[in-house]
Length: 184
Image (cartoon, rainbow, N blue to C red):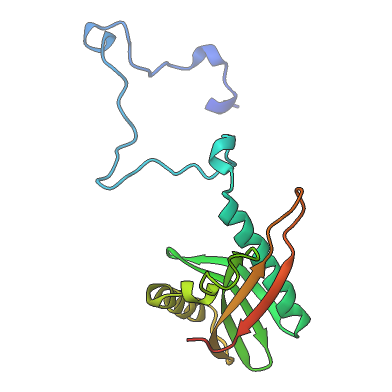
């Protein structure tokens, strides 16, 4: 009974590879198997950042993060359920998204540190929510609602978190929290 080619002796097979000793194939470079298309870009690195100086936070970012944490805790204390924090949608950011009863609140948190001398001089944090910031937050809220449809009524809120300066490496003390519902 003849054996199949797969079980035959290796030495009996015929070699069908190109002879690389020929003058026409000796100095040729291997062909490219990957051809880039017109708008191909190298992939963006998405791994952890290994450079410490690129991950350092500024003092304003640290104060802002602390203010958002205080605002989220305040909302939970008052019966809200915080469903998103620091949500980024196409270059727009929503600080907090919270739900309570039939309302979904898109909250912009503004945190400021005041000393005794500056408490009456500096404007309140809500004045930092200008027309551009309101427009960007509305767009982000519309994109969020398009991605996550809900029966709840949307509302745009502003929260002011007033802090006293941090002393001796401790956290700053919360002076006042003001929740402006339906601010815009």
